[in-house]
Image (spheres, rainbow, N blue to C red):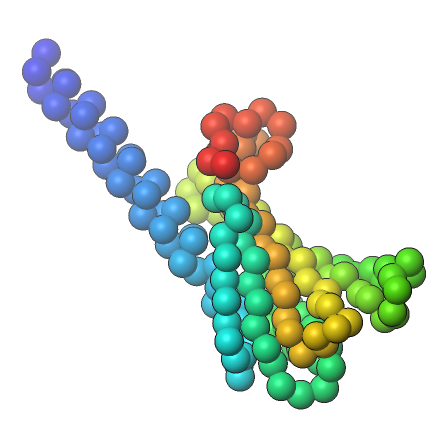
Length: 152
């Protein structure tokens, strides 16, 4: 009976350690694809466990960072779409959405990056990244139906 108990505890500890390492790796890797070369004053703020807001200044033409960031994300396998907010006070106000899905064994990680900017600070990139983790169709972190346990 004792060898089974030791084996069970070992498997549980190994599983917890693996989840912790995966979560740390995902959290640390979140910034790299969203920061453009030449970025100044990079500031990142986590809102809860699943949302990261990233701000930085990029010299050059106003709002040129949007196209550069879109190109970079597309080159790294993200899928994008955008829409113009016609109700904005000062056009052009464009919101751009990018998504990426990655599998790690039975886990599915869905990342969504949303960016548009602010007309008052056109050279400041503002990017919001949301990450949801699923085991099959069941959410580990996020808001998909059938939430197994949420990390927020």
